[in-house]
Image (cartoon, rainbow, N blue to C red; front, side, top):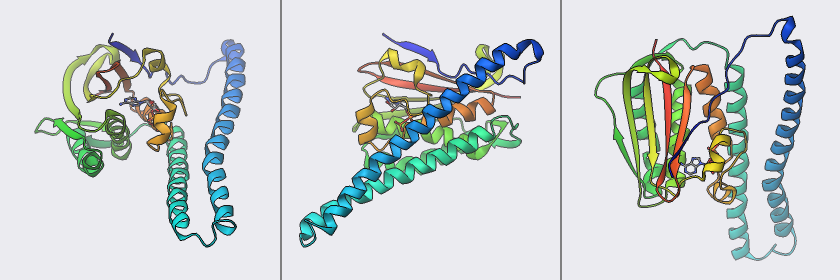
Length: 265
Ligand code: ADP
């Protein structure tokens, strides 16, 4: 069954007036709990590679001191674990930056055709390495809107990178961009960018939670592929800033399609 979910329903509201004070308190308590959960999650995610690194360092200092074969193998693992920590810290910094900027109106004139072209060029080596073919269907002309070029590049990078990672070898990733006079969900004219893979799909129960920080539909696979669990959370905040939406539809065994809806004007 094909299931579609709006995974970006949160709205930015201005501060409440006196009458809303009860709700505001509930909000603050929930925000406090979320912050504590987040700190606990970050600590756990950092501790895992750190524990592995400490263990291998001790082994190299002691029992494996003179074992050159083991040393090379351990150094390889240590380098991967350090890379994992590096990506996590990088994504945490991105997340905190996009959260801080969420309420700041973007001001650049962005060309989505060019941004998607750049994203695809940047990710082509990764696709080749994973034996995945990127199949773009883009207009020849520029498609412009007011936004933040670097952030939109980040959105498309995260979605296409996921499609490559989870899509699987020998498969295609289809990327398209279309302009519409009206997008009902946005009550405005806009563009739809679609990133569709032919991977294993995502079970319906996970779809509503995909943009939560550290939420993983398939935790084992995400970790094996070096995922941080923060990519779609970053996407969500950037789209909030652009008054856009993220939709996902997936059929288990057939593939997943993420759609970015962005208003123009
Ligand atoms: P991660 O770093 O784990 O990939 P994301 O926030 O980018 O984190 O994605 C959250 C989760 O959504 C992933 O862990 C994965 O389970 C699932 N997911 C995202 N994109 C896809 C996709 N194209 N196909 C299958 N699962 C996906």
